[in-house]
Image (cartoon, rainbow, N blue to C red; front, side, top):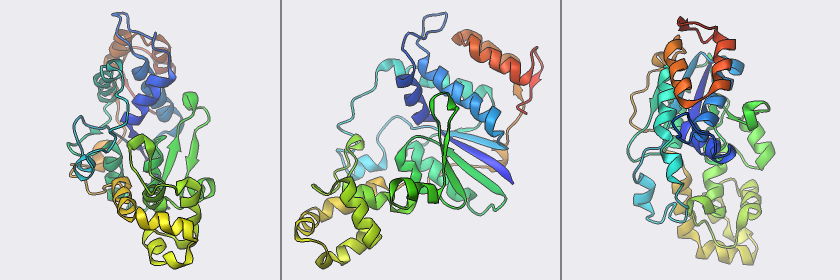
Length: 299
């Protein structure tokens, strides 16, 4: 069985930026904490998971189809510091140096790209797909074919969640996550949901009625207080579900063969690490792949 690792690049950039102190800088004085965090996880993935294929997805600057559907989508989110955005090109340079394909598309989020790739790979029975993310939204693509890999600090205690694991941990199936968001909303993305239902109420309703449609088809079986809230918030519920549903038909030119893990230019990687001041990561490269100017073999 071959293994494909798909990485939520934008999510890991944010994770690295806020998890690692901002005083980490390159010899030229450029802040590099997000790049370091991302690269640290990337190297751990390569060393521990030994994937046959890898790809990275990034958000692209600009509005998405969700903003067009709901102008206030993510409107309450505080803009990240410029120091984070300045590191995105550096992360992409690291990905390129390892010859790992990356994808980003106008109007869509990294989550949508990952969902699209997972769907494209769903017919390959001899392939295990792992999506590396800490974003609950992406959990909806977990299935018998694909699992979620949630990196812990330093990636030493990564949690692997398949569809059953998500149900056991959160009380709902992966495919119910959009329905859950339709009811509970999502404050971080400014998705309203139904006022007064909350996360526990959403889980309880979905465990009993399975889907948002099922809930609204059986309002007569729901206590009066909840029924009134659901009735008043019906439009928001279905709009919120739509916002939370990942698009799995993003127009990307994806070829699995092009994502096969390759040899990389060791000299180029070392030069990039030297420019960024990543001495500890440079040592990991040397330990994993040897020293010298030869082509680096990932395994």
